[in-house]
Image (tube, rainbow, N blue to C red; front, side, top):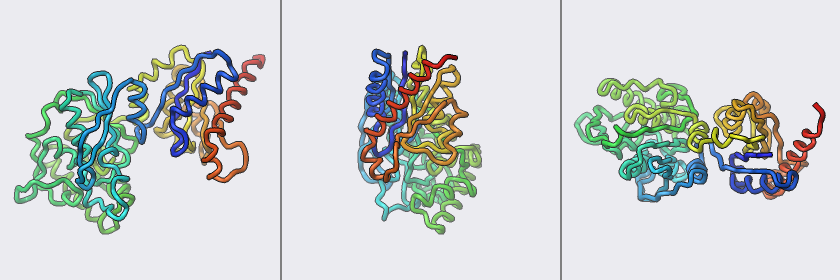
Length: 380
């Protein structure tokens, strides 16, 4: 029997690596001598760079950058296969980097994310994958593009810094200084939202409040974003305002696609392709996946659905061990996951479940493999 373990982490309790260890130990208790392999998986959010680097045998690069408030800091990104880099914008422009009392999307910038992209290009990496979740910003990607050589000018010809408050001031855009290596680069943006740049479902009104935007601030940012989109269209012929995903990360999606000609792709699909997950499935009899909590949202770009669909395409059964089940969890059965095994095995407070996470997971794994063993004895 050959088993593949490909689970997301259980946020705050179990890492993917811990889960692989627990599954390996349990599988060998029930099926001594079975063949197992485990790969850490993430869906384009937190932990994506670590997961890809662990599987590909790459390494991390630490570089000085500017944070969301232009403070000096350091951020890391991953490099692998000699020509590829994987970047999480949250490492340089993430919401947790801004203290709660200072959160105001008028003042934040994606400049640091642009610095990570620039460093990768400067060091010869031409295949870039960029995860753009968890941003503190609503600058339309101006900060990142400014770090790559694009100049945003006001009506008097003065260069703007590239924060949210500058959206309403943009009158012209000079792309002549764009980093020359962009022309040689293949850029994939890991994005699972379909929001346009502007409008009631756009970047500002959908995501701005969680970044510190009051109703007054959001109205001002929305007007600025409309101005910014208009200048992009009139000066550069880039009509990206209503494109699906343009509103991701406060408009960084629009900038990456418009100025850098990046392709938007599901985060989990990008990760699975980067680690050659289809190749890992060769000869596998069953896959165990999972996440901390599974519900109706898990069918939309989360690890279990991504893994399940790849397994379904190859007629390989997949099952999920999860911390808990929420409304609509059963929808995952349509995506190649055949069964869900919760780790909770009795009435308990959430604090107890978190404290006993490793013990409960090991117990759930034993239950799963024992059930598989029973199934193997049933006459068809």
